[in-house]
Amino acid sequence: MTTHDIIVIGGGAGGLSVASGCAQLGMKVALIEREHMGGDCLHFGCVPSKALLHIADQCAAARSAARFSRALGRVSASAPDAAADVDMAAVNRRIAEVIDAIAHHDSVERFEGLGAEVFPGSAEFTSSNEVVVNDRRLSARRVVIATGSRAAIPPVPGLDEGNYLTNRDVFSLPQIPRSIAVMGAGPIGVELGQAFHRLGSNVTLIEMAPRILPRDDADLAAIVHARLVAEGVTVWTGARVERVERLPHSARLHLVTDAASPVGSSDASSGNTTLDVERVLVAAGRTANSDGLNLSAAGLEAGRGGVIPVDDRLRTAVPHIYAIGDVNGILPFTHVAGAEAGVIVRRVALHAGGRMNYRAVPWVSYTDPELASVGLSQDAAEREGVPHRVIHQPLSGVDRAHAEEATDGLAKFVLDRKDRVIGVQIAAPGAGELLGPALHAVTHRWKFTALRGAMVPYPTMLELYGRAVSAELAPKLFNPRVRRILRTLFRYRGTGPSGGGR
Image (tube, rainbow, N blue to C red; front, side, top):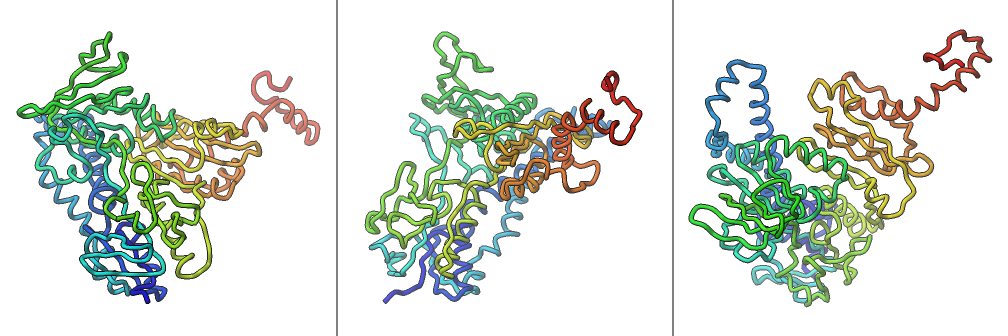
């Protein structure tokens, strides 16, 4: 006898979706969450970070608008210390309001209303079908592990004494740090680094890889890098923190850097330098939350970074135990966890089969400009040996981009041998919102020319699709050979561009 039909460990995006779907389909669900319903995404990740980015963007826009307003210009000139001028209490209140507005969707009361039993506390396996939570023994034929991840803390000597921050701390600071070093220049590090700079901090990004945003397309990442530098963010690549020294009111980072690093008092001969900052933000990757589950009792073993390996049906080494979301280490995005949850509901509750296909997973780095991607990038296609060609469409060819001072943006279209779209990457304001046509193109293997099929309003950024197709088709259509054929067929008298009729 079992106590439930399914046990879901973790009340983040993936776990909640499984619990909701299975409960509404009549299964007896046990949902276990040790901290906050909604998980890191709601409380310490996607939601608060986007609220902070929006506030930071408004501050940057206000300073930019001072160019066009005498009143704003005087205010800007009289308040040179932006960090001291930010009302952090008001920022924190707004972030809390946004979380509260969404939290009721993820509340215990709502899920109990859907038919799930919610157990607050930490789960520990006692066998492959049983877990214990708060001395309560639960059992089920199916178990889903959806425990998410946390910031990975690199083993840097002195870091613990350096009063470091992670994504769990930065949304409730009492005041904006006057200076902050961000260890890691992936999406989290760059997003938060740019936000704090716009709120008034003196920000330094430190990345061990040769470039920032290593998972994004290199050309698009270079656009963000240039924007960061233009705004005044210091960017170190090919650099690592060797140790951290705690000072009375700051932290001193001892760095080993590439001699070509663009800033600081680096000793070019040794590549060593120091950096004093008020706070250190660690954004150097994630670690899966699999410790504490007593996986060995269930016949499981975590891999590197704590991840629990799964197959394309999301089954672990024990077939009736599934792992979804960050804990399986495949793609750490909330929308991926939601899609994986859908596969679990179909397989477990409906017995309908199903498996994950990660070929057309989109993601967005919410920098300014945003970087949006779906399918294969040029880098990935080259790395995987996929025959391809790439179409570039600079935003300088889009009228709306000129109006919005966004002409440094770029769209890239990766096509296979049959000119089908296998990947699209965009650097532009609101690139995530522009990705819609690309999602359909990659998912359904559209021909590139199909992206020009719909009429779009003018002027909008969506014109980039039609502009890209038109630029590609123009040489094939507007050429002397086509003009000669048409003159012969229809007795046209024009010559085309100067000299083109001969």
